[in-house]
Image (cartoon, rainbow, N blue to C red):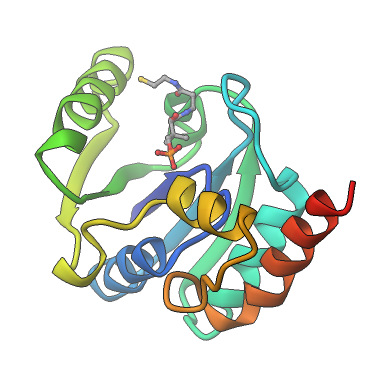
Length: 163
Ligand code: PNS
């Protein structure tokens, strides 16, 4: 059985991410969201917090599960019989990095396919970095993130401002 793997940092998950996961859940019978620990990036949220966020906002999809992974994506994908990595493409600027990642993963393990979903035009501008920057100034991010995690984001950045 094919398994769609939606990998990402999800620091934090945005409405754009959620849109891609929702669409993958319609295209594939099984979807696993892989919250990557990512050693090269400093994250605002711990892996546990990010997994908790993703679980809460995807709880309504019957075929989506969430796991965390500290390692190469290709090694995670190799655990599945027919792994298909699903990534959202927002703009041409995403393409170079995504193409490199897809080809590198395929080179390391030819069983690992990658497909891209064109981001909904509503979300082509949206990134987790933008969400964090806006929240860092104490401004409202409710139009960018799922309502279930808005309070967590506000609290995280409120606490940082109070440090
Ligand atoms: O949400 P992001 O930060 O754009 O996701 C990028 C991510 C986590 C999917 C990518 O950095 C990744 O796959 N990291 C795991 C380590 C890895 O496999 N690196 C080699 C990529 S070719």
